[in-house]
Image 1 (cartoon, rainbow, N blue to C red):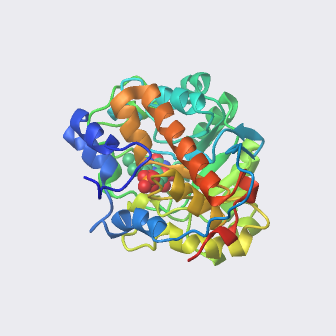
Image 2 (image 1 turned 135 degrees about the vertical axis):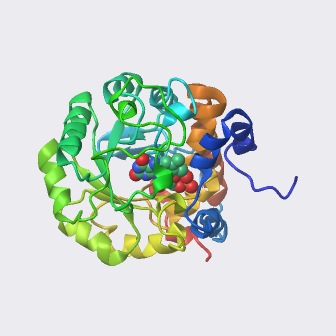
Image 3 (image 1 turned 90 degrees about the vertical axis):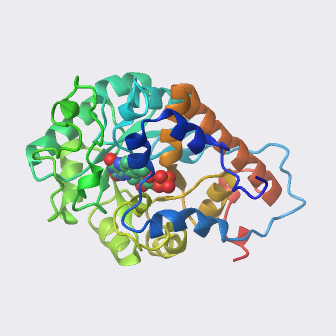
Length: 343
Ligand code: FNR
């Protein structure tokens, strides 16, 4: 219908729904409780209005950037999401190949269903997402493996101190890797539960363990962002976990500016949650984000068309962003700033 929201890849979720087992679709699409945060995320980006500049030379538009030493073709990263083998036989390896083909960066979930060494072979630059687990040896082993395999940064996810039961795999997974050996349909991961006593000191512990920059994901408040940076975080990711943790958590579009004001002059601030079009990306950058992440759309693309689906999705984001930048009078990302926002 003509009133359907524009997305980077129209109809993608519906096509994924048609090919995915019902339980897998439900798991990927789920929000917490009443789905309030999950369903408000996109609307909060769409509520912002732009003030386009004119008479700027936009004959060539460059969406590229440098992020922690990696050159990326676009400021849209693949967010860490669990269990890609529920979407595609090759799982995270296919995702990594698609992300690399598009010139972007993948954040590999610690709930991945492929070995990090295998993902690394297919990937361009990639970061590794970590939970601080009750069984610290599991965390240490994960971090050491990811570091040895070539992860360029760690992403410590802090908005999920408890795993709701529904975040365990809803389907039996292939059983040829470490994670899958400990996961059956709907079972918990013994020793793999997040440690709810995680605190700011974890940031420097991870830094010591890996020698890598540590970004903190799941920050929603200026005071927490400040504490992360004071504790040595190299960046913060404003996120409410796609509305899958605390329902009624504010929309990330609405809290991003306060985090940027608090720490944006010292570390990169990234954001995710409901970012579905290149224009959503432009709004996020105008609000002060250095880059954004996209979660569910990558899973839909992976389910529909594997690596090619993922690269096609990210190419669509890049083309849409490029067009939006041209129409807004910004030829490069450094020219995207708060003056582009009308409200
Ligand atoms: C997630 N997310 C997530 N985050 C994380 O740090 N580690 C993880 O393992 C997962 N797993 C996961 C599974 C699924 C199915 C989803 C949808 C999400 C959260 C993810 O990184 C990101 O914050 C949100 O998905 C962003 O919102 P959108 O783009 O999905 O709206």
